[in-house]
Length: 336
Ligand SMILES: Cc1cc2nc3c(=O)[nH]c(=O)nc-3n(C[C@H](O)[C@H](O)[C@H](O)COP(=O)(O)OP(=O)(O)OC[C@H]3O[C@@H](n4cnc5c(N)ncnc54)[C@H](O)[C@@H]3O)c2cc1C
Image (cartoon, rainbow, N blue to C red; front, side, top):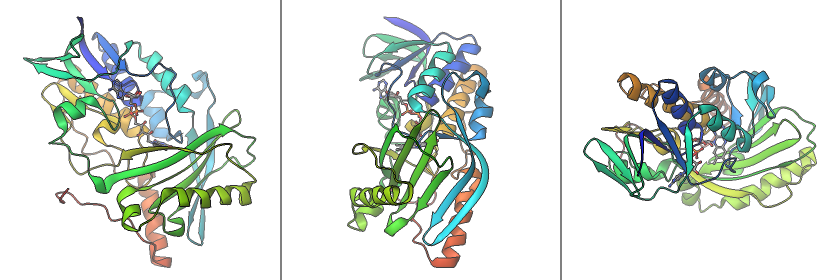
């Protein structure tokens, strides 16, 4: 049996951030991930200045491609809002492996199946034992499944469905572009250029709203692919890949005894832009602080909105101008 003070399930941004802080605090930390890193992760790879600050990230020390955008273009029906900004893009394939290595934690490849609570600690698959457990295994996290399913249920109304592809491309437009609610899509499409000639394009929407409309994400993808070809002379080389995850719920049950949820396992992506990397890192760091210092593990102040609410304000502006269909999101205490 391998023993550790803390086992972190999942080596994505939430798990790496927790592991890094726990290691700095002198604890014996083991990260279990079912994948070998570097691993593929569907994600546009847009990161905010806050992410850099939280990670004490110096772009000069980053060994992989890193691109900064000076402008974000928002498209809302007939409106086009070019917004000056400073935002960044990375490739998750590179970024996540770098973060995990930088954490200094021991890593083992293991797909976690069964977790048992015994006394003050946990046993995983009869092979690993720990006193504290951080569940950072994304949407299907086994820690969520074992201990949080009832207290922190997945809300169908907050489930997203996404299609995405990242490919080598000689893009010429270095700005990030977002198209909201195009042809009734209850979500948005994106164009995110990256350093070293990579491009990420994709489309994401609220699954339940699509279903209610009798709509299909693939039809929206085909329309988006035509737009990319018409406007940018870009044709993705193959079909995109699909993934589903959950946006920020009102529930806040993210700790049970010595077990913690962080990142997508706690469903922390923002409701407007589905930004999940920053909340994953913050929550991982806070879980570590709670373990190290006994501080309360509270994520209530993590914002549901990205960019200081800029997207929400842009949508309100468009609503006033042209009656856009705003996705209905549940309020605190709403039925599941
Ligand atoms: C198409 C798409 C585009 C996105 N674009 C952006 C964006 O541009 N910017 C942004 O901020 N957010 C974006 N997001 C959201 C962002 O990707 C996630 O919120 C973020 O990855 C969450 O990090 P995490 O560490 O919680 O989980 P993950 O990054 O999913 O890591 C979880 C890890 O757990 C491991 N794991 C899972 N199950 C097990 C198991 N049973 N045993 C062991 N290991 C396990 C997995 O292998 C994985 O490595 C996007 C998401 C999608 C789907």
